[in-house]
Length: 377
Image (spheres, helix red, strand yellow):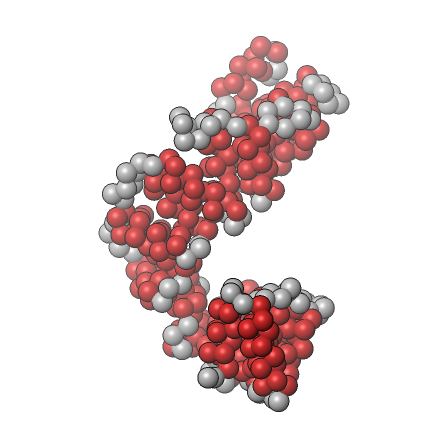
């Protein structure tokens, strides 16, 4: 049995027998100690991912470094990743990451060729260079690495180092999606749903959203939830399935799912979702902390009225201010009234009037009516 098969067997056995897993780990450890680079990487992966043991990136780093120093391309790539992300007690060091990525990529290691492309695209340790990024993404794709396909597609979609082309992006996304890349499956679904680079096909979009959702992609889960919510793409409208998918996506940090879920709980939907201001506030707050301006306005309003949270004018002002800074006219109007009236906050009529004028000039009739009632020009 090769070390990779040994590692996969270890992962499987961990779920069933602690004693058998320990025996397999001991065997793998002896092979790693004897200098086998693949086994060293496997031991590193066990500690990095916390498989059958608590996560310990310090130990993972030791094993990745041993593999890298022996010339293993995978070990070099993993060591570069540790430097890029500051893991295992390391400081973030993009130049050191680049050094190891280049060693690995030069050996034709497709995953690391993609990592190197990312460094050039985002100017990490080097100047931004889209042409160089595309070169490495293409080499990664030539190695049939799914993220290589995905990244070449992104370059076409954004028009970076190549003419912008949705149709070309679609081809590359499909290659990545068919390689079971969950992110690409969700992106392909989005292109198909909206007809980017092709004729819109919502039924085909649903197929890819389902695959993305099944593979754990939060964006795919959110988009499939949206399709069930509205009954699109040949799906029957199903609020229960939609809510389940939104919950999964929200737990993974998808900001749109958090916001939609909050709205569902704030209003309630028949017997499927009971009105629950506390649950709504929890999801609005999660989305607000990620910068969603609509969520910032709504959690501000909930703090103002005490819906689902303890009434807190200071928190209301804070979140209204965050939303207003992003151009939310509802937040501008509400904050303007609070400051103009001095409602549970220090009165500031001048600032209040400025915000009300801003909301009114953006077309908010309620702000204009309030100004007229107060004689504000």
